[in-house]
Amino acid sequence: MSRKDQVWNYDYRRFLDLCSTADIQEQRARMLEQYAKLTKQWTVEVNSEWTCRLYFATKMILNATVLLNSKAFATNLGMRTANPYFEYYAAFSLMRGLVSTLPTESWQCGRIFEISHSKAINVAFDWLAKFNRVKAFELKKLSMQLKAQRELVAYRAPASGARSLGDNYDLEELLVLLAEAAQFNSEILEQSVEKNANPLVFEVLQEHISAVADVSIEGYQFIDREDLHRLDYVRRKIRRPYSLALFMTEGQTEDFIGSWDGDEDAGEVFSNGSPSNWQAIFDIP
Image (cartoon, rainbow, N blue to C red; front, side, top):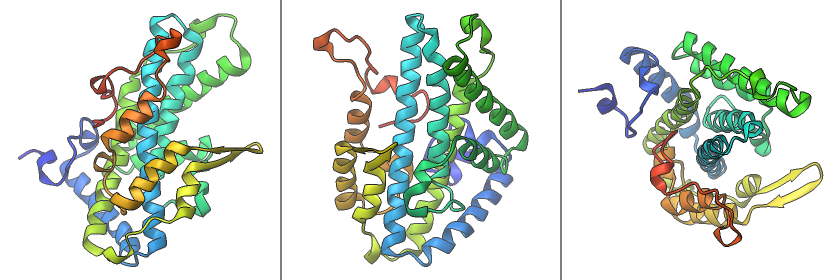
């Protein structure tokens, strides 16, 4: 029996190879203890918060997928200035998604979704270091490189163009490991909820929905009607945290990814393609 068959409901590509089976199980047991401190005192408010946190994490996986597809499209067109943006923000999206699944990170009235770049990098890779310190350090350095390259292009306009940038790295490894780390956490949380939480408190509150869908930036208000629609479905049908792979629905993934496709009637040629094109980072339904 393989490691993947012992506990997990997701077919991990890279995450379970970070360390030994014994270490994986040790970390699982440690995290079950951390989540149990929450789920043994599960309330409507805590259930609602964590349900919205996991919804946000699914969005970060979908966003990273769109950005990776956009990078491939830009590369084919020779749009080199766009690639540093797509690479870094795909990674940053997944760091934020991972942080939102961590029991050590508090809700703070929704400010968890406003985490800074430096904190997201530090928190995400400090957590990965619990499984493999060397790999976590390597991927943290890569993330810092991607951030630096994005800032170089955006703020300093290098006269030598893309020749200033490095490209000797495995971006897909970074993205897959971050997405799978979030999935790993969400599986453990789901198990803890099933074991300890009272189903009578499985409700999702408007205040937590608003923290995801109603965003204020630089004095401008953005209300995402699609988020409101999807979270209303979550409120009525899902009602509690599940692992990210189970939390995603085909309607959610198709609508999110399709919303970034070009308008064919206007001659806009970019397309994320069919669901078979969405699988580079995560098994998206």
